[in-house]
Length: 582
Image 1 (spheres, helix red, strand yellow):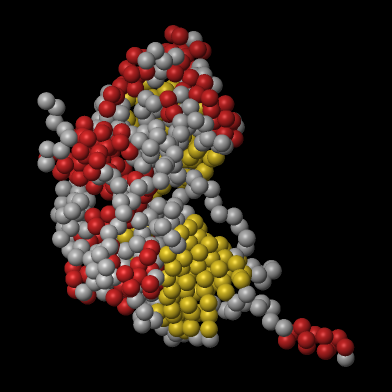
Image 2 (image 1 turned 60 degrees about the horizontal axis):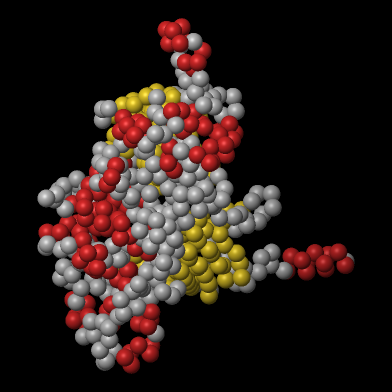
């Protein structure tokens, strides 16, 4: 009898004290209707804790940007997706043996976005891992509330009228269920564009009878534009910014947002004139050419991996024919790099090194790595020269790289052994085509972009470096238009997978592993800044006046620096690229 009573008592206790968030949910539109259905009005920044950089990005935003093919199928990120006409399905994944929850999965009807919230205690990825629209999320129960922590988000938006949320943001969410109501709290912390955490809530009601239809998205050319054109408003030229405050009788400064507009006390100040202080970006550390604290190798796709932490990023293709690498990092990191290469290919030698340009953080390891490799040579070459013909990996580069390294008296063993002088060089190695494209007058005059066709990976060199403004090396033939042309070439090569994410992966010269959407954001930035500075040149402004006007202010928190390759040096290089020579 005692055993029966004990069993009954155990069965009476719930296995989990948490609520059950799973099921079908319909959104409630009684709050924030204008923002969630018809869309926010241009210039409505009220109640947003934004800084001046975010404000300026909103001012420059043009809604027709969404007609650009690469922008058309971009979904709402996970911190914004509940805000749309978002019929929601939540399911859970259970471990068969332990019956513990491994993860919750969400599907939202608007754009058909899928998200996983891991509940098994796994760690978040490294800083070099790709970012996605939904980010990487882990959850834990805090009583009856599920708390979710998200990192690795692509650049998104705080409000769908151009106010951005950076890819350095982190998001904390809470799911709170009261019977048939689910409240979804989102707290965004963004060190780039927000001065305080931004909090919003969205409510859902249980709706088990709803049906969620598929959401296919097909890209169409809606407006004919020149290749690479980016719709935007030049500073001071957006004619729509005052429509919102004038329509509702608000002081225009109030519509400009800022942290104090979040609080009820701000109403007491609305009658008084108010101006915003000019936002000054915090000092940013310069991109370092020193060795990283640790070498990290990330699988990318197919036979290709990315090695970070060696100076510039290194792309490694390993297979039955041996190893091919794109760039060689700094000289002092060569031993560490070679050790990682041998882990990927313990039995096959390093055969090829492809240099994307001449800078030492990409060619510094040439000599030390090449001498440990072995060239594929045979026939009359070996007969005429002897076994020495096979010693050392081949180093491939544009002829400008050889010329500049020779002029700089680089060690003979570091010089390219195979140069090309045409627009494209093709190879076939480890079962896939490897195409090397020359991009003239870009980062330098000897830039190469390498495309691994079967693995579907692009190695971009320093034409694309998402951690800083592009270095335009004027002394070595660089030009801002060439950088933009190179970014557009990468966009032409890349084909994203579902929801403008994944598909062709891009290894940048520095920074995390990326895809087309990341290159698109960077291309748009460089193009917009070029257009602004060109407009200033057309108005007769001097370089000092252009710098004082701060044409990069809205992007400085993401890409700017006060040391090393500074923002001023970038602006000066763009100016000199565009200013006609006397």
